[in-house]
Amino acid sequence: MIQEQIGSYLFYCREQRRLDEKTVRAYGIDLTQFKEFISGTVTELSKEVLNSYIIYLHGRYKQKTVKRKIATLKAFFAYLEREELIVENPMRSIRTQFRQEKVLPKTIPAETIEKLLSYMYRKQADAGNTRSQNMIITRDTAIIELLFATGLRISELCTLEKDRFNIRDGILCIRGKGAKERYLQVGSPMALSQLRKYSVLWKREIEKDRYFFYNRSGGRYSEQSARRMINKYVERASINMHITPHMFRHSFATLLLEEDVDIRYIQKMLGHSSIVTTQIYTEVACKKQMEILKTKHPRNRMLVNEERY
Image (tube, rainbow, N blue to C red; front, side, top):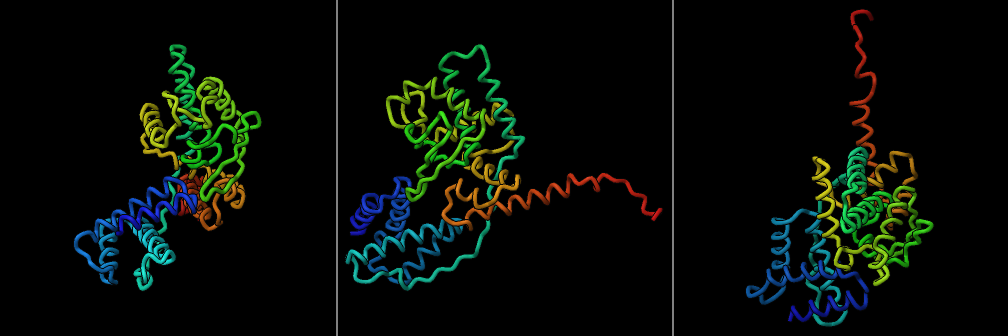
C-alpha cells in the first residue's frame, strides 16, 4: 500500500503543485528510504516506530539532511490525511527539535577567480585550437563568466532558455525556485562579449532547441557537466582548491557586500524570498574584514620601541 501512496503523492507534487523534477526526485528518495526502513518489520505506524526512524536518521546524516527528510515525511502524511487515505496522521504527535547549525557559505577568493579566468582566456587564444576545441573553451568560459556575473544557481543556468536571454542588452529573465521570476543584468562587458561569442559559435545548436547552453552532442548542458568542467580547469590552472558551481553564487553575493552594495539588492538578485536567507553573507563579509585587520593592518608591521614611551 505505501508504495502506491508514495506514487500518488509524487504525482500530486509533480502535476498539481508543479514542483520541479529535482525536488520531486528528492522526495521520492526520502520516502523510499522510509518505506525500506519499515518494510517487513512494522505492522503499524506507531509513535515508537517513527521515533526509531528519526533516531536512525540522526545516526547517519547531518542535521540539515535529517530536517529535510522529516519535513518530507510530514508533508507526505499530511497529504494522505487530506485525501482520506489514512484515518489519522501518525506524524502529528511527533515533536522534533534541532540545534541551530550555522554553516557559512564557502566562497572563492577574487584572485582565484581571476587566475581561473585568465587561464581559460589564454587557452581560448591558443592559435593551435581546432574549431571544436574553440567551441568548447568558449562555452566553458561563458558559463564561468555568467555564474560569477549574476550569481545564478547552476540549475538556473543549465535550464536558461534562449528566449529568456536578451543577449543584445545582456538581460536575463530567470525562473527560479517556486517558479518565481526575476530579471538580471550581465554587468561585465567582458562577460557579455564572451556570451555573444558563444552564441555565434553555437548558433546551430541554439536554434534547434529552446535552451541557451548545450553539450557537444547537441543536448542541454547538465549540472554534472558543469561540475566536471570546473574541476578540469581548476586542476589545469594549478589552483589548489575544490570549487563547485554554487561557490560562484556565494562569491558573487559576498564580494558585492564587501563593495557596500545594499543587502536588499543582493537578495533580489539571488532570488531569495526572505532577507534572512541573504543575511548569512554578511557574516562571511565580517569574517573577511576580521582577517584583513589581523593580517593587513599597517600597525602589525610597525616596530615600536616600548622603552621610549
